[in-house]
Length: 264
Ligand code: PGA
Image: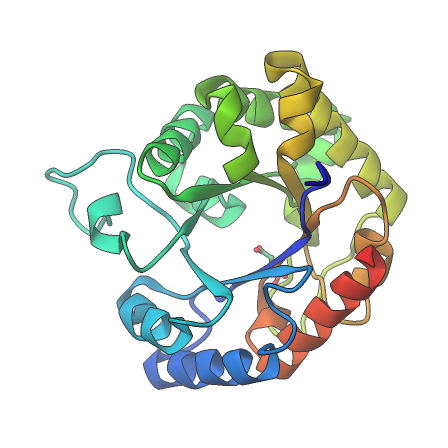
């Protein structure tokens, strides 16, 4: 088996779609990607919690994975409004943790994000850990220390053997879109590749090059079918996390085919 990880496209539907829309979108994604997903490329859809069961049902038996957009680090307890691993097990095999929208709106710390990632791994769920600098950090020349700090906290918490089941996403906070059709400026692909290289080095410094080479590291931020090419064509970038542009099934399918083409 080749050590190069398989590329992956993750759809983060955030809070964009309603209940019926999510189910319809899942059905369309299943149809559109029937011959592509799981054949040289992985695809994961992350709907909102209330629709998780229905979306999981639509995608059951397909090669499209299902993820959640967050996870609580504790197994159970007095946590109003939160969702435990036990509540998603059997439906989701992936969990986004540390998304910048949660770091910002809920003050999530590196330690909390690391605890969520560890809880996921221990429960057989692959964590998709987001890291990235804000515009302010970038302007102050703090990009590298910020990424180092965020990534170190996570890789230090995870066992080396779990890296093959974990994902890290470089999402410059300033590059995340403001909604469908409202893309933000993106970094130059070379810059994103360089910073993804830095993230891999952080993992290698902790767990060795071999384990780090199995960790899938993705790019995210205003990706659509038109812009994804230069990011996914670069070696070392194992796929993309897509928000707004993933809510339209045709666009998600086009992005997936483009990433696959770049990796073939
Ligand atoms: P975007 O979102 O593709 O809409 O920029 C990416 C993300 O934040 O996950």
